[in-house]
Amino acid sequence: MRIFKRYAGGRLLLLGLFALLALGGCAALFFTAPHMLPPLLFAERTLAVIAAIRVCAQDALPESRLARLTLAVALPFFGSALCFFFRPIRGEAQPPALPASSSRFARLAGSPENRAERADYFPTGESWRAPFLSDLAAAQREILLEYYIVAEGVLWSEIFRILRRKAAEGVQVRLLFDAFGCALALPSRFVRDMARAGICAKPFRKLSLRADAARRDHRKLAVIDGAVAYVGGINLADEYVGEEIRFGHWKDSALRLTGGVVSDFRHMFLRTWGAKNRPLAPENICVPVQSGHTMPAIAVSDDADGRIPRAGARVLHELCGQAKETLWLCTPYLAPDAATMRALMRAAAGGTDVRIAVPHIPDKKAVYLLTKRCARILEKGGVKVRSYLPGFLHAKSAVCDGRYVFVGSYNLDCRSLYAQAECGALIQSRELAEALGRDFCEIWAQSAPIPPARLPERVLAAVLLPFYALI
Image (cartoon, rainbow, N blue to C red; front, side, top):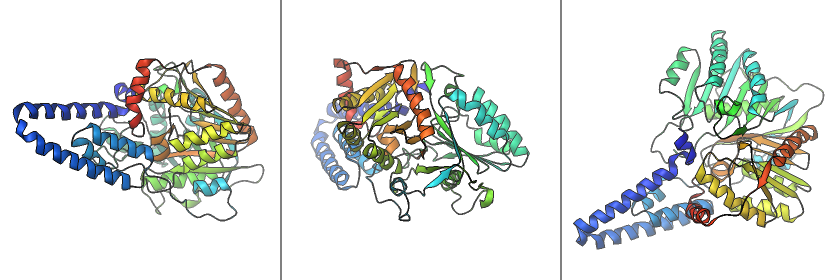
């Protein structure tokens, strides 16, 4: 599992293997049947031209087009076939229409503006653990869990004991996990074991050769009794709570939300689960917003089908446009599309203090090369980038002008912003922004500037650059 995750889920290894096979086949053909080379070369070039025309005619991000065109040029026959098989990362479309009274953020996200009664920020997995387990144990009617990674270990054992007990008490327990994210983390009998415990578990998009197989469910979401929602970057695995040390200190973050916005997260889960208009429990399970102090909140979500507006990217770009004083972001991977790079640099050029914190110890070596390359480009545009020295920074958050907070599962890379199912919460709260601001300042104080690139690093980054929309 660690090998797959270190090398971007094995995608680069697979591409390299196919490249060797294609080149080996050409070499074998040259020595065994050289007279067949001219017609095969003509056929391969014709297929490559057709593939290139098809790619250029599609509505897709420039980065996605570049990656697939490079494959068509680099891999004989196989690269061109990929251009026909895999669906591209599409450009933006118009968001759904919302009432004119909705805020600009709500209209861009295509989600209704709701309210949150309370928003608790957890700066680490260790601080998140006890409240999360306590809320699971207090569930009376329904537990909905949607996670990219669920791994057997100490944390999952604690969670499973609670879920099994609650299921025996009559609580509806639903677990949606990503088939790729959990491919080597869970046994093949996992779904059957959960069923025997009264837990309904199912994988999101089983591994196959489908054209949309690369689009995964990257969310980290829990909704309990329609009254409490957890959202952020923390998966259900030991490294997220300090039970396993893999890349130094694992720095993460999450939000615990109550109030009306929780119903939006619940409907988000139901839509992905496949319930559509058939609820898992009565709709009145959602607790109404109580009187008193509440804060504006938007449940931001993107599905993994490529056919809806990408709400996360729109919200991020709007934060860049609205930021006047500060825009501080945390991300484990920094390989965004050109539009996001321009938005960040435009904000910095306008006088906004734009800072981005990234890890110092990587979990994926290839992506980290691209992270450092993008960081150096952004620094030339006035954006400050530092790496978190104690270990791996997995937090995915943004705080803008001490007023807006955005915490969720979104990374600052093309796959997260434009291809995968993601979710997050945009909250307008000075108190919450102050908490995130303090946490970011602590991260920044323990971080160092990105060093200049050495020649081998520049060469490797140049080779990987055309494919960064894929990894």
